[in-house]
Every structure is written in structure tokens, then in C-alpha cells.
Image (cartoon, rainbow, N blue to C red; front, side, top):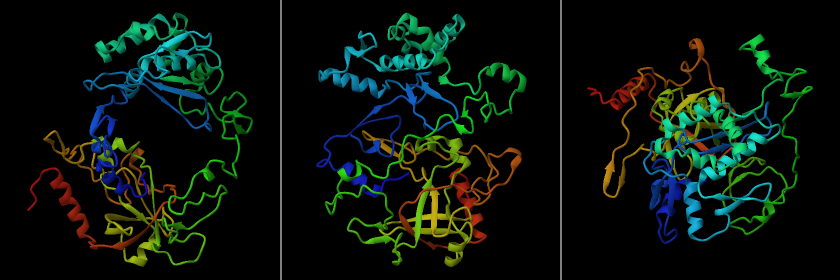
Length: 438
């Protein structure tokens, strides 16, 4: 993913006349937080509370919640705790001793993240039919696992005090399971004992909780908007005119209205190709690029281009190319594939990072070098159009991703290497591993 004009953002973040002070909360010195004056160490996903929202159109109902499982980063604090402390110092309402009202009107404290998330777990436990109480064995597993993972950071009595005695056992039931998940059928235990794995329990059947007849039980069915009441409240930053609240198809335009890429008209395009991006199948968010094992499964990010567009430009699979987006050019490797439509080129987002250890970092005069080459595997993962990693029985497949429109670009061939490309790629890989190549 990217922000339009994102390459201009660092200069703004560095301008202390525009933004005098920046404080970031991050698990790493990231691509954005590296420009902050102060970085507060944020716990990683295994060290903090989180509640994950889901789309309404899904097969079965669920509500997921994660909790601190280990304590690794010294002095890392959840940003919720930082905000609560700041608001308390400013004497703002909504935090402190009597901050959270319950259904009976009694007031509970909000002094740290647990005060909120344990009550959230309680609401999950009592939604629909209440969950069963945790057994003595489940209570023991909960206590021992948190004591082993969190050490002195875990205060069992403090957690228990965030809810009532009656609610606590149900909270443990939810937390031990990482949330609450609807069973695909009534009597799922008996059905699983009969059918085992490999049976679709949530298919269209009379006893399925996923379907109501032939239709999904949980679907996106609220409404369809043909007029937005929010859009016309905004104004074009250059012309000052209000935005059109009705749906329409427009050309891709510069801020002053000049056409960058014609969509509805027949004008000649300034950029004949459209550049799009999509989420890589081997990564989650940008931050998962910090995983060396995941990087090795896809160390390069080739640009997909349709054979028709490639032929017009003399581009062959594996050629080095240059993307010309107007004010900036970027080197890339071409992957010629019918998996992308003519007139469009694209690549996965998440590569090209400068934060998270990808480049050297200097803090208070101390420089930390960039991470070294990964070197976990000798397998050649990065041959365009050859995908043998990650598939059962070594099946070779060609990829085809759906994508979304974005800005325009123009591709041209750059240093056509042909067979020499593979030799030079091998040399680059050896040098990344520290080998001397003569």
C-alpha cells in the first residue's frame, strides 16, 4: 500500500517549523517512526492486548481477542497505558478511579489496558448465550501459562479485580480460546467424532449454522448508497469546490485538472500504463517483512506485465526495466504474465523499506548496521513465473492476483540481459551472503 505523494512526507516530518515535535509509539524504528523526536517502545503483538474486527459477511460468527503471552522488550508499554496516564495528568474525564459504568450503574476504574480489555472479554463471554465457566484445570493452565510467559509482569489478582467473581471464570474460558467462535453445526463434537477432518461442517445443510437455506446467515446486507452525505462536506484543496456526492467515473487527474490517464475519454494518456499493487501471499502487513524466513520465500518483487505490453516494448521475462512515473523512476525486474490485464502493470506492496533494520540507523550518535543477508536456504525462490515453494507436492503454478486501480506509469526496457541475467542474479545472491566472487 502507498500514499499518493508519499515520497514528499519525510521532508515535512523533518521540518520542525511545520511540526515542532513528533512522538511515536512503535515496536521498531520504522519507516515513519524513524523521523520522530522520541520513539516509545511498544509491546509486540505477543506482548499486548488486541481485539480483531472482522467483516460482517462470513461463514460463522466469531470474536477474537489476544492477550499478553510473553514479556520480552524491556520497559515496553502499551500505548493505551501511555494515553491513560497522559489524560490523568491533564485531569481529563473518562479515566481514573470511576471511569467505566457497568449495566447496574456501578463505576469501575480505567487505569491500565487490562481494565478495558478484561471487560471486553466479559462482554464477549456473555454475548448471546453465556459461555461455560472455566474448570479448575483451565484456571490452572491460564495461571501457569501467564506466570511462565510474563513473570513479574503478571498480576493475577489485579486481573481478577477488573471483573466480578461471577464473571471471572467465563472470562478465562474466552481468553484460553483466544476469543469466541461459533460451532459450524449444533452437536459439532458428535459430528466430528463421526466424520473427522476433511468434512465441510459449515456447508449448505439443514443443521448448518453458516447458512439459512441457500443464503449465508451472516451477510453484508445493510444498504447500498447511491448518495454520500459525507463526501460533499469536503472540498477540493486546489479549486475549493465541493466534491460530488454521486458515483461517477473520472479520468485520473493532476491537482489542477490536467489529465494524467484518461478513463472515460479518448485523450492520449500521459502515462500509457496503470500501476497497481496488492497484498503478497507470503506476507501479512508491511511489518512482516522483518521476518527473514518470509523474506526468503520472496526476496524480489517483480513487476507484472502482460505479454502484449511486454512485446510492444521488447521486454522479456526476467529483464531489468525502469518504471517512469513522471517525477521519479524506479528500477525493477519484469515478470511477463497473462495474470494481469493489458494496459496495467503491478507489484506487491511491502518492499523497498528503509525502517525496521533494513538500513543503518543512528540514534544519539550510535550507529546500528543494517541486518545481514538471511542465508537460511539455498533454494532459488526468485525466478519469475516459477513458483514451487509453498505448494504441496512441489506443484508448479502461475500466479494471478486480483488488484485495484491506482496511479499511472510507463515502463521501458532497461539493460536487456537475456541469459546473462541469471548469472548476475546468482552473483548478487552470493555477494549478499558475503562470498567473494571473482
